[in-house]
Structure formats: C-alpha cells, structure tokens
Image (cartoon, rainbow, N blue to C red; front, side, top):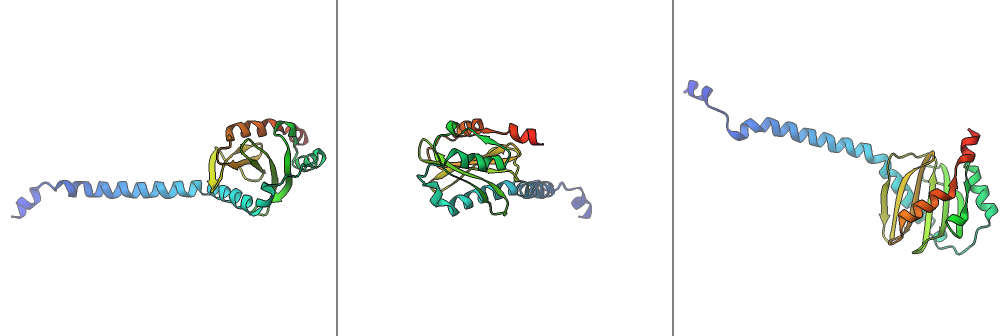
Length: 178
C-alpha cells in the first residue's frame, strides 16, 4: 500500500495549490503596492475638492478683479498671467491648502459656468488625473514646478480650459529669477 501511495500522481488541485497561493500572494502585493504608490495623487485630488467646497462662495463671485491685483498675486509665484486669454477673472488669491502651504486660487468665467484653477507649486505629479464630485469635474496635471488643477461644472470643456490656462501663465520670470 505504501509503495502505491508513493507512486500515485498528486491530483490536479494538489499540483496547482502552491502555484495558486503564490499567484494570490503576488496579486495582493501588487494591489497594495499600487495603492501606496497612487496614494499621494489621490490625496492631492482630495485636497483640491476640499478647497473647492471650502471656498464655494468665490466660485460664484461676479466681481471683476483688477489686472493689478492679478499681477500682484501671480508675480509672487514668479509668473505673469495674460488674463485676456482666459477671460474675466472673478477671484484670485494666494490661498493655503489643506497642507498649510500656499498656492494660487483663481476663478474665471468658462463656457458652462465658473472655472476654478489652483496652482499648487509644492505638489508634483507625474501624469494627468481626472477628479470630480457632485456637479463638478476637473483635471490635475503637472505644471511648471508643481501641479495645476482646473475644475468646472459637468459639461465644461476641460481640454480647452487647460489650453487657455497654460497659454495664459508665463513662467519666464521664474526662470530668470533662478
């Protein structure tokens, strides 16, 4: 009986049991690794949405911000802004984000309603990321020495707004200061 038992081939399940366990372990490790890798970018999207909702009143401001005030804010970050490329600027300030560091918060009139732009110089990402919550949609993308977020109402042409914003910001002053 012992000889027969030793010569018997293991069942299909028994042969694959160790391989399935190793594969499962590999998949779990990959998922955890990706979760940890993507976590900082997810935190950035949360920070943008949180700031948007915290300052919701400025989203619907009908003020017209004077060019001098716009210049004062963006020049603090080493840039110039050609506001005629984006349209009427309704709000601009250097705001502190959830991590207590400053960036630019800008609101202007888009095609479907107000468009909010955040320039976050201290947070860099390596690729564009879509964000959204409730009636808002947006993108976060690498820009200059940090990240930029553009958020509008659902239906806003974010690709067009991104092109406008990137054309409006001139960072040559920043390059000259380095």
